[in-house]
Image 1 (cartoon, rainbow, N blue to C red):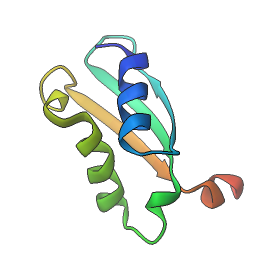
Image 2: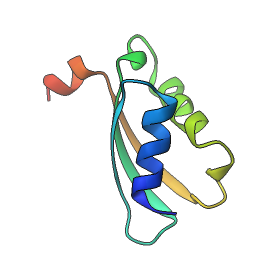
Image 3: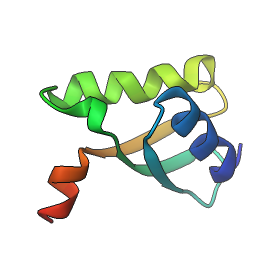
Image 4: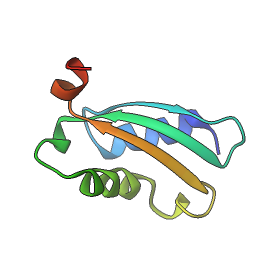
Length: 78
């Protein structure tokens, strides 16, 4: 699994989202995902939205994915 494929899957599954994905070993990854669809949602719900874009890859080809999920408004305040 590579970071570009994960980025593409997340962005395709959450239209308008922007994702930055890193991970050097091919099974453990970190992603920051900016999506206005996250507005009003708790972190767990946001993470589930991202995991849904990756489907069966989670727990298989993707062993672990550490997430930071933000709306564009939240990102601007950082």
